[in-house]
Structure formats: C-alpha cells, structure tokens
Image 1: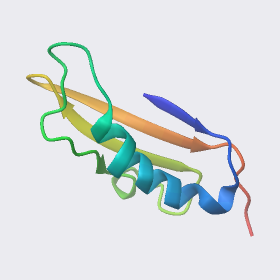
Image 2 (image 1 turned 45 degrees about the vertical axis):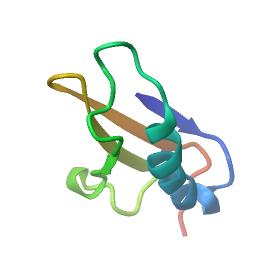
Image 3 (image 1 turned 90 degrees about the vertical axis):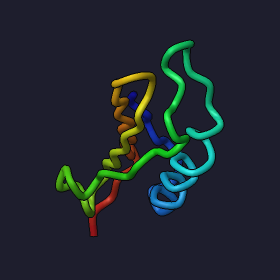
Length: 79
C-alpha cells in the first residue's frame, strides 16, 4: 500500500505514528484479509530508511498475507 504524504515535512514523523496507531487499526479490509492483531509494525529501520522521506510498516492479514504500507513524504527537505 503506497501512501503519498502531502502535508508539511516537519509533521511527517507525527503523522506516520498516527497512521500506524490510529488509522490502520481502525480500517476495514476485505473478507479473509482482516488484520491479525490490529498492529502495523514500523520496519523502516530494517530497510535502511532511518532519516529519509520514506516510512515502511508491515501488518499480518488473513492466514499468511503480509501487507506493506509505504508512506512517502513528497515535501521532503534536507538540511
């Protein structure tokens, strides 16, 4: 799942956490693909995107399905 983040870059981390903790757990998915534990695990560091415009989360769905959520900050600025 690809999520384009269009808001101010300084709020990116805060909105990623809200997406993981509030939005995804309250979302509904097709029959047979319900989230196993209503937890979106942040795996950004495992992909080497620690200080970047990309966040990655993964959730277990259905019997054996892993759904990756990738949020891309389109208002990314470097210092």
